[in-house]
Length: 267
Image (cartoon, rainbow, N blue to C red; front, side, top):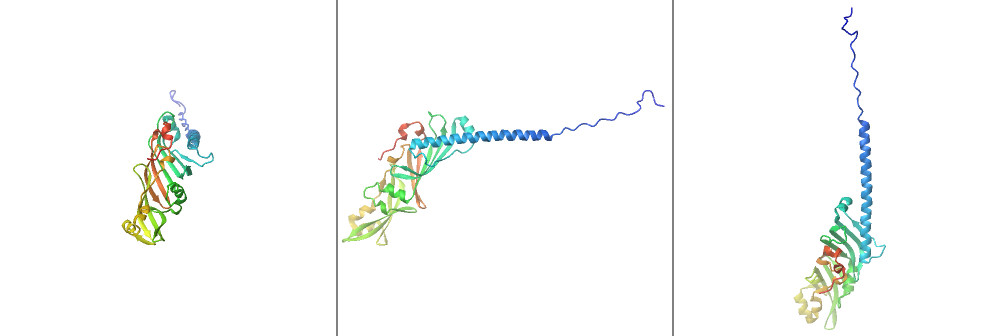
């Protein structure tokens, strides 16, 4: 007989329904992917606008042909830099750029480039590389220099000429060491000589040719400031492989000071 206070059966505990987490995980992943894609698209558009704008500005300011290939690099994410108002670093490169009689492959790096047009940039550097043909064109501007016979043989610029001894022309080869002069000019200083295929010292050359040797013993000054904005200061010149490499410092105020954008003068 069943007790009046006892239920005829024990209630069974209902199993708890497990919540499925994977739909939430999938949804979260999809949302993150969409956000990432939107951010990537915005960054891509911003980068394209910035690099395209810089290229257009360079072509117009420097006077390059409209179809001149100009590479613009802006390291890092562009959008945060635009928000800050300053591009941390901008590198601009182009081959066969011509400034009057000076032409070469140019690479310019500017730091702290402001977005506003009324603020100066940070310091910058520039490198100009000249091959043998471009070097000869530059040296042809020097009176009396045998530019057609100039060549490049690291670490020197080479040139050949002829001196007359008792009416007989004797070929003379000169190795010239390039450097940045105190006035910012490119200097070419004789470092070694050959006469008739024989290596000679400067003293021996003078003893053999007398005053005629002065024309090959001199240091040549090549003014390049007249072809470049005065914001550029020549700091070093060297020969690397088959190229003459000239390095410059750039005054960041060039972006706001029109006087610094005008060509320099020869001292």
